[in-house]
Length: 429
Image (cartoon, rainbow, N blue to C red; front, side, top):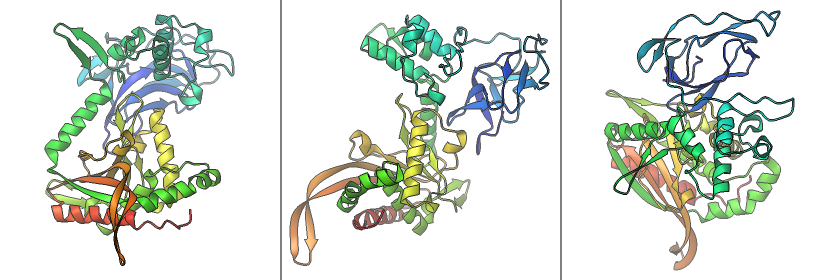
């Protein structure tokens, strides 16, 4: 089990792609695993034949534990029959269990379909769903895959099934996926008497719920609000977005502009870039900005832009787009979600004008951006006051009152507002 990032000591085996006797090449996926942050793949570090598998699906395995043994003699014929694995004690939900003990298998996979070179690969789960929904292979080939190398993922086929039926979440494939598969992203609904629908939380939602509850019980949350006139910023982006995309090959959103302003404020007020450890305050020298990202299944993940202070606006744009795309295609690496020092969330994307975000532990502050709205505003000038139409936006910041007092929280927030309002509309890209 490879090292998966800071503070991660174990991972859950979601799916094993190989069995004893199978050939495997370097960097070919051996199994899918999950941590409390992100799902990931474990690639093979060598080429050979699987001689022994020392874990099962559903096992909780510590970092550094041997997962499998691979016979690397390239002279071995692929048809050679290897001896069955010995009984090795493994850790399963805190209890030792032998490798041949029965475990609950989430589903019975159908044979993996491997086609000729250039054709698509379909996982056992995708094939199971296709079979249960009566989807022929020829029909399956027409589905656009969003996974690695264009593979059709579980979400791809479930979305296809839902579009065919005209409803979401009620297909038999959704029941297979949500009710049994470890790490499932689709909840299973159970109808109960009394007009009650019970939906079981999926693994990620349970982790989010636990993380949020612990944060509220750990930090003394205080939220401050401010309103910013972002007209200059909006006009600059509108005037430059086409030129930017043509020159850099990237679409520029408001997110990198907001992150640029956050970085400037954190440099001026570094206590907001810290954490509380016992009775100590650990001020971080690195500025690693986490950006809350909504996933297609409705869950939330926070990829991190490491060393955000070392990027210009072009670099920040590329990092924001890269991490957003990886998050939405479920291709984030564990390291992409680790070591954040301050979190930013754009709730305006969904139409909210303001909110009270929960601190992402062990950080001490989180800043939320509301929707940008055109409003009539009193404009103060040397010639007198006037009323004009401006692009206005509410900003809210929750911070840990154990070490951040209202004065510092408000000063930081006002500094952020000033950075946005003084944005130079004539600046170069």
